[in-house]
Structure formats: C-alpha cells, structure tokens
Image (cartoon, rainbow, N blue to C red; front, side, top):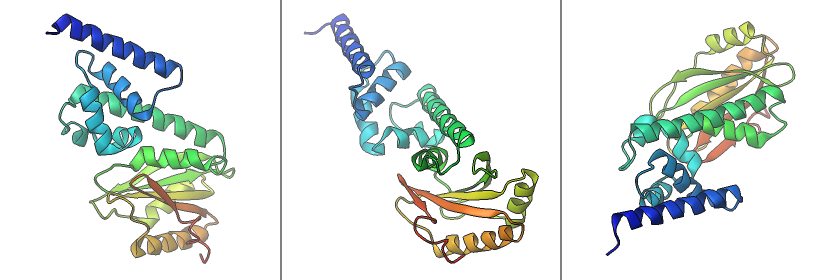
Length: 230
C-alpha cells in the first residue's frame, strides 16, 4: 500500500516535471492548465480536475473568460481558484489593450481578436462595447456601452456619438458577443451597424469595423464585406 507521504512525493515530483517542461517550452495547453491549478490548489492532485475543465471549456482562454459565478459552479473550483483565473484573464486583457493603444489596431489583427475574446467571450449575456480610436487608429478607450440579456443588448446611438466627440475620436469599432456559440451577425446587428454608421458619418467619424465574438470565433463585418455598401 502506498503511504500518504509517498503519494505526496509522487505529486511533488510530477509538479516539478511540469514546471520544467514549461520552462523548456514543451508544455501542452492541457498541461498548462494543470500547472496553473497546482498553484491555485497546492495540496491536491489536480490532474482529474484539469482534464474535466479542459474537456468542458476546450481551451484555457475560454476558461479564463468565463464568468466568476459560472466558474465556481464547477466541482473543485472554489472562490480562490476562480479569483486567480479572473486575475490572470484581466492581466492578459490589459496586455492586449496596451498593444492596441501603442500601434494601429490593424497592425496585428490577431491581437485585436484576442483582446475582443478576452473581453466578452464566455459571457452569459450580451455586452455591447465601443472601441474609440484616434486619428492613427490607436485605441483611446474601450467603453462598455450596455449589458443585456442572453440575446439582446441595448444600443443608444446618441450616447456613442457623444462619447466619440468627448474623446476626440476619429473612428470607432463596435464589439459585441453572442452567448450562443458560432452564430454570426443577425439582421438586427446589421441594421444597428447601418444606423450607427449614418450617425457617425455626419460628424466625419468613421466606423472601422463591427466585431462579433461567438464561441471562440471573432466575426468581422469588414472582412465579411458587410460594410461595403455603407
């Protein structure tokens, strides 16, 4: 029979090997999650938990972007672990946001996509954000415009225009999410894009793009040619 101290020794050895694999750049995404959990839950074998979480979420990014209250509903995830996940997610979001503030948003579209996913992916309700850009297409500010239900978020055109003028923004990116995975722009989404384009255009403020996050996909109205006729 394996004694408790022998089990602890085996677990410690496994964690040391995980850390070394990470430092060597050889860790898989699943193993990264396992390593992260060893710091959140230091006194338990977390291999089973990491497998369960990875099977449910499919990626670390989806896990980190999940809502706090949703995270703690997972067996084995308590408030301290959920807080660590949200902290790491916020740090990642800040890194992407900083990159968008330093260079034009079109410089690295992947970073823009990753930022959008870090902000709204995994949310249980729709959120509508407006990313206000300067004349060089650098991010000035990301404003959470509204938070709604599982299939709707209010859009107030006058408030968006007013904020753009306050920030001296010369163009904007609209961003919202669909809690239902892999659903593209709805007819209503396209209509509100048209209305916002018209309102902003009257003040020589451009609509650079409308981005939609659904599941792990970022849909771009610009790339889908939905803005061609505006």
